[in-house]
Length: 610
Image 1 (cartoon, helix red, strand yellow):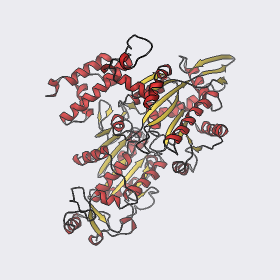
Image 2 (cartoon, helix red, strand yellow):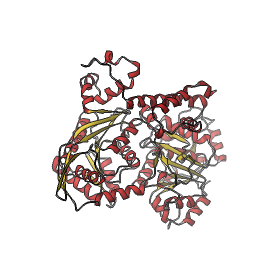
Image 3 (cartoon, helix red, strand yellow):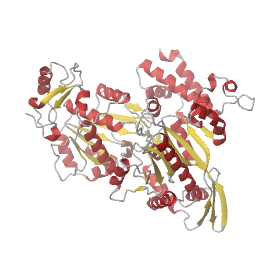
Image 4 (spheres, helix red, strand yellow):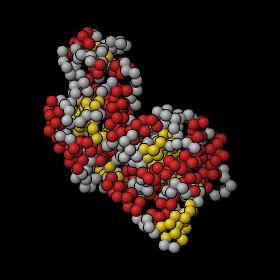
């Protein structure tokens, strides 16, 4: 009898022969990934002995638990790809909300069943994610992960592994982990590995601490670039991380794994007194740095008309979704700092007579509050950064951006909170944002569904946030802000002004879709139809395609042909783009429309692919 969880090879052979090569429960032929299962669960003191074992197919084994969740196609492909590689380090890059956690746990469970590993160690950015990983492991795969483990205790044999934060790992006893990795074959999972540059304290520590792990799996939902802060256990090409498997936004939309993010931008008239000088501007106006900060501070003021009107619009959208689609749909407001978040909660109470749930990291009950919101019908949750990364609350459908942070990395993380599916019919997530140039660019990158390499700026974000809170504090006197007005909408890779969408409103109602969706569908096929014939409007002049639309069409065609070439060459899509760079092509951020046409021609040239 073996006191470890996994059956050894001799025991597995006996179980297979005893079952005559068929699943004990359903009777189908066992394939290579069959499970040697405990009849009485190991977590409930079941012995790892052939008398307590049975041979099952993966489906039957997982259905034994209280919950069962089928793998998505991409998750199956990732796991198949992992098994096909014989490497110690593997980087999985899957968009936020794409299902990295479950895919990773499923793989770890398979590795245990096949005696490749004995234990799993998972390292995460936040305390909340420790509990979330442990809950999902227990709920779906009957794995028991100790998320309260501390180095002053020995590793319990009754647990399949442990979960700790990067900050906790930094202060842990290296020698204990050296012993754990010596005693157990271990898979170490690094969730959101982009937090760990090798010249940061976390990066250096995990590189040394887990050097002798049996296997290492790095996860990220955000493509990252690092010219200086190299991430441990990650491969690079030209300064950009090279994933071993990628699941991006285009594929997730196509597979109906995530919702489509619908971005709506609002402007308004903002005024303040600067040392007696009265200033009145809009968010879209070009201003100096001092006025830029002051203007944004007024727009984000919870007591101003601009904020109140934006909140009412977002709140009405939740009511609409609750009435028509999802009875418990919720929204999240991202605040600038803790005092700002508290003021927002107070304003919501006055406007709706409903109490929003407040989550800020310094409060001891933050994790409990997140769980309460997740399992309740509360309409709003207000947070600073506690819910920006990894937190899974599928009923979130609406996001209101009220933070002064303006970085691509943070923007993607926040949007990831509202695109997670609750069911396959909730197609859209709605994001309401100030009409700020940087935010519009970030939104366009997401809706264009292009993978963007972004630099690690975690420390810079904190500095920007603190600087923006304090600069010119004594010089500025807030006066007023007007109600917010929708001026721009971004969806499916294209942007539309409110005037443009008004033209499509009646047609959209006829087909039961949003105006921006109808508009994007029409624009997407401009090259294939007579626009005047299909969409009669008052003007008789044929509509001219804008440069932005031409770029969007070219990029979609490039992605389509790159995918075909990748399939024909048995390569990853990213490898096709790397070949383009090696052939002298320009990087995406450097390409103008002529470069895009050249890349399209390069992809289309058959001689390049013989």
